Image 1 (cartoon, rainbow, N blue to C red):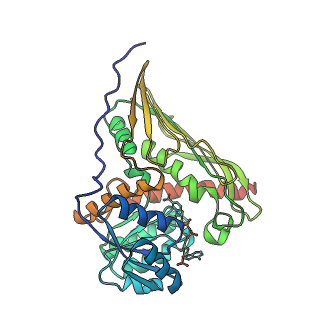
Image 2: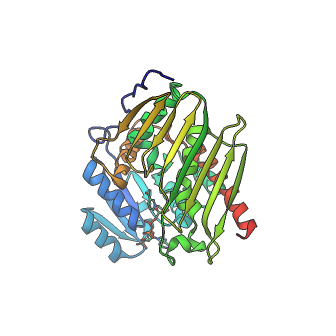
Length: 342
Ligand SMILES: NC(=O)c1ccc[n+]([C@@H]2O[C@H](COP(=O)([O-])OP(=O)(O)OC[C@H]3O[C@@H](n4cnc5c(N)ncnc54)[C@H](OP(=O)(O)O)[C@@H]3O)[C@@H](O)[C@H]2O)c1
């Protein structure tokens, strides 16, 4: 069977430089916060002007390492900083709701690390607090903003893939036992930390499923260690997803439609590329930005600055309703795993 090779559209990702600039404040300066600030300061015009830790010494050290002018030994001090326009919440998930709503109450826009909280109820609480305060709020689902996602979505929206019937995605990283990923008090478990990406991708491509089936295993500490999810849609489409903190998985994702399919290069969450095939014709999209791994957070920051400058309270690319629905799927899966006592 022959068909015309798919024509790849140009990316519409927000340019990293030359757009609006925000003055950012970072609360909870751990591992991801360091990568976030590095990405912003290296690849965008965005500026982190303030950082707060529970420890004044840690805040000062982080500020010194990253060229941040002000540091605070307490998160509330940063919320009171009139120079900060937007707060990036980078704590473990268990603290996201509290820190985000405190920042919102102080009148700040917020970008909250993924997952936005521990449950759909927490996602709704952030959404409602931000709406009441009239500030911008978004979960930091940064993969939505990398060029390969934008180009893939243009293909899907143009009908080039036909009707999507199957999405497959996996994300697993072998984690050292003992850290926050194994601690139920800190929102541990694979689904919240890593599974949120495959679930988000399936939601992006297929929307909200009719049913969720989850099977898997728990750790000795009682959090989900590894799981496989089958999502069934009213149309008959399906998503097959897996996640693990026990092993590192290929990190692949694919979407198959009645006219064509997209296969995203591993790890699909990072800046990468994809093949799109129709019949026996294949075309490639390759991210030639030179940004790798978590440097890809730069696109998210540039997009958020554009959204805020445009006066938006949510991102049209990753609205809070999407976050609520993704968390609803994860709630369902986590309930099933806990009930099975796997
Ligand atoms: N986008 C991504 O690719 C990506 C990658 C990794 C993680 N994340 C997300 O980012 C968040 C943080 O992950 P991380 O790996 O950066 O965590 P981490 O290194 O453990 O750092 C989190 C920081 O939060 C602060 N904190 C506040 N309350 C805490 C508590 N009760 N227990 C421990 N620390 C607390 C601590 O800083 P102070 O005490 O100094 O304030 C700590 O350094 C998670 O929600 C995770 O899902 C995203």
